[in-house]
Every structure is written in structure tokens, then in C-alpha cells.
Length: 163
Image (cartoon, rainbow, N blue to C red; front, side, top):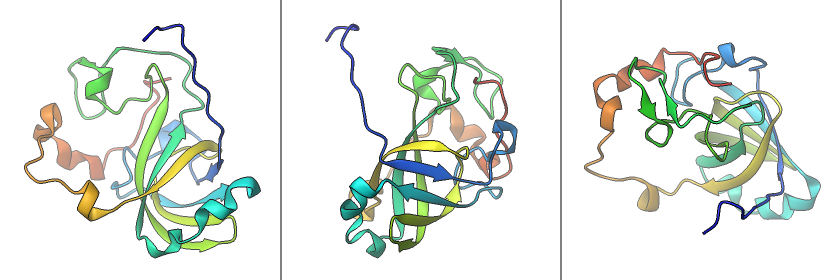
């Protein structure tokens, strides 16, 4: 596979959240500072929302639209040691794609009312996938370097180091 190959995606909607600035954002959706938000789906894709209301949780894939650089080594949130970007959830990735598991409160037309959002207002939405415990839950999971401080996720906010 060549680095010259290009891939493009269509945004299926926009995420609207209370977070206008990176410093306000929670570190992850499980943070106590996460808030409700709304995904507004483009009318061309509304038919794809059929049957989604039966799921309690969703995977959202989105574009980190305010990331301006790629960093293959980062000092991640919750750590002071430089790590490879692929061993973190830092947004400064070669492909700035974000992933969050959120709770679906309700579907109203082309709007998904969400709980536990952790992304910036105006974030372009790439895809939605239902969280299915039989497919997605795992046993004997290792969390690498995060094992020693993963409990801090609930109280840690984002910061501006990764722009």
C-alpha cells in the first residue's frame, strides 16, 4: 500500500455539543464533565437511522476538524512519558479520526440526542455504529501504560497540547 493513495469520506452530519474550546472538553465520554449533545444527521442519510433507537449506546466516528498537525510521539493526557501516538488517543494522528462510545437518549427525525459527549461543537460526523455487548465487550483486557492511572479519566479535562 502506497502513502500516495488517498481516501475521502462524506460527513453524514454534525455533532453539536456545549464544548466550544478544547480546554472545556472532558478527556473521554466516561468523564464526569461529559455533557449531553445532539448529532444532526444530513437529510440524505436519515433512512439509515431506522431501528437505531433500540440501542442504548453508539460508537461515533468523527473527524478531528481542529487538529493542525501530526505528531507520532506525544505526551498523552494522564502521563508525563512520551508515547507513540498509536498507543494513545491523542488527536494528532496521521488520519485525525475520533472514536467515542456515547449513550443514545432518543432519536427525533434527523437528530440523535446523546449523553456523554466529549467532542467539540461543530465536529463533523463520519459514521455511527451500534454498541453490541456480545460483539464489543471483552474479557481479560490490558490497558498498557494507562493501567496505572486510568481512574483519573473521570476527573481529567482535555488541554491544548494536541493542536
